[in-house]
Amino acid sequence: MGMKLEVRNLTFSYDGSRKIFEDISFQYHSPRVFCILGPNGTGKSTLLRCMINELRAQSGSVFINDAQAGAYNARELARIIAYIPQNHYPAFPFPVLDIVMMGRISRMGYLANPGKMERKIAMEKLEFLQIGHLKDKPYTDISGGERQLVMLASALAQEPDLLILDEPTAHLDFGNQYRFIQLVKRLAANGTGVLMTTHFPDHPLELNSLTAILKDGKMIGIGNSEELLTDRNLTDLYNIRVSVESVGRKRICVPGGFHEECI
Ligand SMILES: Nc1ncnc2c1ncn2[C@@H]1O[C@H](COP(=O)(O)OP(=O)(O)OP(=O)(O)O)[C@@H](O)[C@H]1O
Picture (spheres, rainbow, N blue to C red):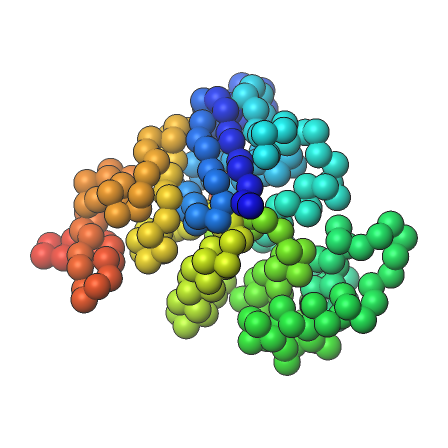
């Protein structure tokens, strides 16, 4: 059926005076992929945390399936949305498989212990992401990129309608970044929505996603990646010359410009 997320006139401040962003509004329907681009410190993570009810906006509202986000308790929200923050610091050396099984909590009865089915689903998600070999390793003893994939496995085990991912490729190697983007395409094709922030404009171009540009506390553009991510818009956004080029059937962004000296 898909889910609907609506952000209406959202304004946020951490200290009550400096506005991190102001009057942000958009509508999103899953399973389309939605990417949010913006320079460092523009409030992308803060916006995501407002969407999942972790931070309370100064004004404006977030609606999930037409109900105020605040009306859902954590368990109800976890059945709809799985969120992976930009950084997660492991506190305990739980085995990786247990971490992935934790993704099942919102799907289990109150006071129930994870059983065979939870174990099977968790293992399937690890295998799906080609990290089954990590299942018995302590979560504290794996690399940043491996942790990111384990978090993704746990989020997938949650079987949400929407994945909200904060810079999901930040720790991934070149190959895993590509595999990850292909995975996002597959998830969307199978009905799971993905809303993600990224520092790589190539990602929304590859995903042909709905894309929003955040700059100086405002959402200055939203639309199809192909139309929104022009040389001009990317040059203005990142303050370097950028040209968007066709290579075969792909569109890629070239920082410094294709025919220019790097600046
Ligand atoms: N807990 C906090 N308290 C006060 N200010 C904060 C807090 N977290 C973030 N900020 C500030 O809010 C602004 C937006 O931060 P945020 O992390 O949302 O940006 P971002 O666009 O996700 O950045 P990046 O791309 O670097 O991850 C920044 O100026 C940051 O310093």
